[in-house]
Length: 487
Image (cartoon, rainbow, N blue to C red; front, side, top):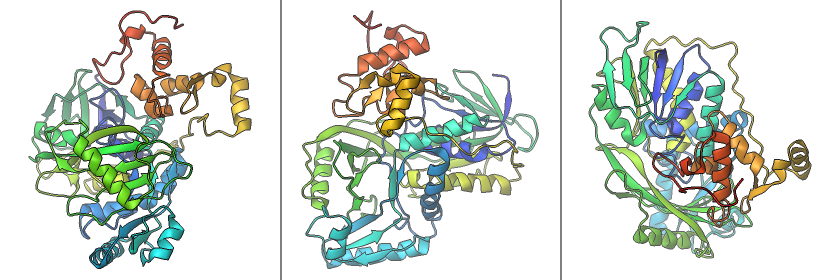
């Protein structure tokens, strides 16, 4: 690659994608460089999707400054980008006088952080708001602004909108080395050269949004030296409920919000998340962690049928050792390098505000940001056949019979919806990439029925043999040789 970009963003998690979308409105050439072969495969992947309101961070921290603002922005972002967002409100349940004292502290925190309409409520109001909440709860912090999203969908929607506005996306391009040239960061010449297997990337400014790899990127650029701690979390997904649960929290600990039970935008129930420091890269699920989740969930929702687990998974939060805060700003060591590091919880909730803050940091650093006349903030949501009204279903099938060919029975995903997921920009290039975009394989059977059909559709659309189709990243082949009976 010989083009010199104004800005390169390392990392296509929810933070990097949000920043790309925010900056796409300006007259800049931008490239998002991602080590994996798709969007949101790091910390954003192992996430419960909660849009925390902002009462938890300590006042004065960077987290506190961006959390409540990010939560506020989600309504606008959801409308513009066409992703699902449910602002249901939430409760932190207390069971004794000691818990009530902690709830008062959380309320004061939230008020200092700008969280609106917080109140301490009693048992009658608790069960009016969420009838399934534990009858043992004596008090709760009621927060109307909390909500939840699908974190994959947010990141994908943001990057699709950015790409539609001219941003370049490089996948399967892990940064192996960074060369920093002399001179001022404001020079028109490239100041940074990123060496990747997909080719070198030249840029004037560099934004480090590499999640758990942020310390490596900073080190390669000769900037701040810090160490990432892998705070691993296990998460459990339950089958769909007739009615979506409101997010219910326990009183938090110094290192975690505790075991949380919440609904999702697709109707499942999620129990999230444990917090244990483990070896970097550990994505194993642990029986002890899963049992702790199920026990904690039953304390909040005693009638929760924890036998209905459809999936357990794990990931690592990108925590900077020695601090529990976000690092957002220009490097004090390397001018022109901007850090968005340590974006642990509440990273999903904060993403729109982190992007807004990064724009402000760039302005204050002298980066010229001139808004483009042709910038379009709107991304039309792709058709979701399962959620579509009957009239729209009939219209789609009339336009293309493949809309009537159901591939994933659990989530009612037809062939045409899978094809659309592959053809989007940037589109799916793996079975899991399809799954994240249209939920084929997300249901009760976890792709037991549909995976072979998805493989065949990917092979056809990508112009490759089925044996070359990946489950996820490089080397994750699913089949060997021809598939019997697959056209």
